[in-house]
Length: 128
Image (cartoon, rainbow, N blue to C red):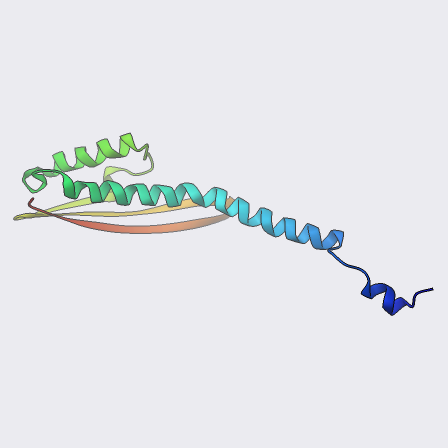
C-alpha cells in the first residue's frame, strides 16, 4: 500500500476547479475582446478617414462645408454612424486647414459599468 504522501506526488494535471478558473479567465478576456474590438476598429477607421483628406486635391481651397461633406461621405462609406458634425472642428487658415476630432465612446461592460474611450485627433491639411 502506498503512503499518503507518495500518493499525492503521483497526481498530475488540473482539478475540475482549476479548469473552471482557467475557462472563466479565458471567457472574461474573450468577452472583453468582443466588446472592445468594434471601438478599436472605429478609431482606426477615423484615423484613416482624416489621413485620407491629406490626399484630396485642392483641400485648402475648399470651404468648411465642402470639407465636412468630404468627411461625411467617407464616414458613410465606412459605416461610421456614431459621430456627428459637433464632434469635428474645422479651422481654416491661409494655405492650411486644421481638422480636429474629439469624441467619447462608451462601451457597456455589464450592469452599470461602462468602459469610456476619450479620443482626440487632429490633422493638418496643407496646400498640395
